[in-house]
Each structure stands twice: as structure tokens, then as C-alpha cells.
Image (cartoon, rainbow, N blue to C red; front, side, top):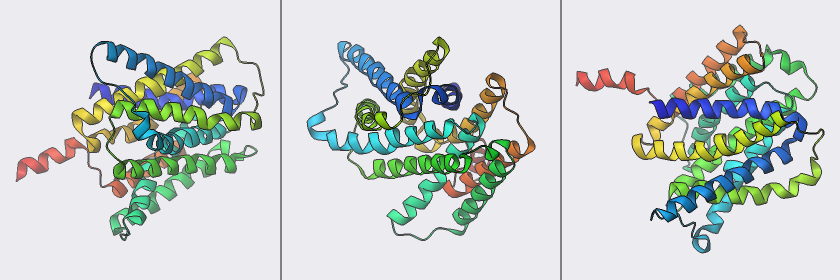
Length: 296
């Protein structure tokens, strides 16, 4: 449980750090640093593990295409889109929009498997749409220039995560650490062509560099290690709980450090989005499943 909360707090903080650094560095420069720092950190961890006799080989000859697909859809493109949106949207709004990823995942999965969407999932999709509309429709950030484009970019980023998740289910089995390590190097390559189109609009301060370092090492490198360890220990379904905790921390960090206003629409809209996500994914928290299991 502690690892789950820690991961949610870290990933919720990623939107805070992007909101701080993106307006100064621009989306491409920020994300290039993010994935590069994450890749270098994971390379260091790999070296330490290798010295301890634990296999961490990337096996590039066999899996390089896999790393490219995962690096593009799970890191490079969604990171860029979220960083682009972070120039305009608040950290709290970004974190809630990110929580729509499982809803998109269920939709992509249904299309992928050529199966009809269940009435429960359809209701979840409707609720999720209503929640997003409520969140951004009553938030003052929606009045900023370019806000609608930023919202669409954030939703497309969440959609990218759903594609990556669906791909990972059908791809060849690769060690979790290798997935994180290899995909970060692939993402580093993918972001490079975007650098000339999004130059840094300002000069970074020591605080900006601290946010970038935290975004790369903590929110990407360490977070991936925690996430894959969590999957190994409790399984994918239980690890999904982090999706429901991320917005809570995203809203909390935004309010504490950026003085973002938490309005009724923020609380109500995010709650509706999370209920919709739960319906779409069929997720039921373990503390609600336990009584039913005992009653049998």
C-alpha cells in the first residue's frame, strides 16, 4: 500500500513539474531532458544490478523494434503532448485528463478485439466525458488563449497510453526493467527531431533545472521501477489503483505549490471521471471485494 501511494504521489507530481518547467523550456526541450535523464538514471541502475549478478540486458538485437513502439506511444508522444498542454493548463486539470487513459484503453481494446462495448463500459465513457466537460467547462483556465487545443492535446496523450497498453498485452514478453530502460532511450531519439520546432522561450533558473531533474529521475526513472515492482507483487489489476490516486495528488500539489484554486467543479468533475474510469475498466477496490469474497 505504501509503494502504491508513493507512486501516485510521484506521478501526480509530474504534472506540477511540467507546469513549472514547460512555459520556460518549451515542450520539446523539457521532454528531451526528461527522457534523457530517465534513461541515464536507468542505465546507472542497470550497471549496479549487473554488478550484483542480476540480468538487465536490453537485448537490442531482438527487441529494438519493441522498444521503439513502446518508447513512441508510452513516452515520447504523450510526454510531448502533456508538456505542450502544461504551458496553458493547470496541474490539477492535467492530472484529471490523464486519468481518462483507462477509458480510452477499454475502447481501444474493444476495437482491437472486435468486441462490442458493454452497457457498463458505455455508461462509464459517458460519465467520463461529462466529468471532463464539467472540469474544463467551469475552470478559468479554459478561458486562456489556446486552452481548447491544450485540452485536446492532453486527451490525445491519454489515448496514446491506451495504445501502448494494448500493444504491450500483445507484444513479446520483455522484462519490466528492460521495457522501462529501452523505451526511455527510444523516446530520447524520437524527441530530437521536435527540438528545432519548439525552442526554449526563456532561460531556466536553478528551480527550473531542479524540476526537470525531478521529472526525469524521480517521476520517470524511479516511478517506472516502483510501478513494475508493484505489478510483480500485486498484479496489474491492483496496480491500476494508482490511476485513481494520481489526480488526488495532482490537485493537491497544484494547490500547495502553485496556489491553484480547487473549485467545486474540480472535485465534482474529477470524481465523475474516476467513477467513469472504474465502470469502463470494471475496477473494484480490494476493500470492496473482500466482503463479497467472505460472504461466499
